[in-house]
Length: 133
Image 1 (cartoon, rainbow, N blue to C red):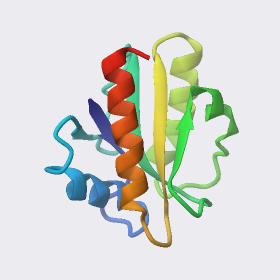
Image 2: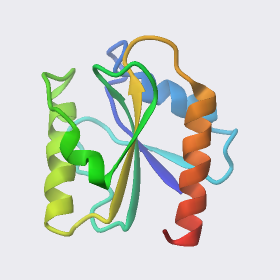
Image 3: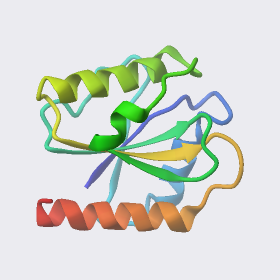
């Protein structure tokens, strides 16, 4: 399963997804982390199952945001222009049928990262992808 990693490597707090991906890089054999650079076109258009790893401002713990909850994402001022565009693009592409199931693994921008929770979420998503659900 591919996990698309978003954020800004040069900005503390918004670079957490890169740190998490590096931590799990050789620990989860069924997961391939794909870095998406700022201002790069989204590489997952027309995919049926998309998993995104990104830092989210205003949360206190690792969360999982799936298709039904995407509308609940509030788009406050973000760390970079790329972050602002991501939420809009996902909602838009889903609405016009260019994306299938989208799950965002949201990391809190401050506080301790719960690696066990992230691992649990990713393993569950790998199983779902393998079973086509």
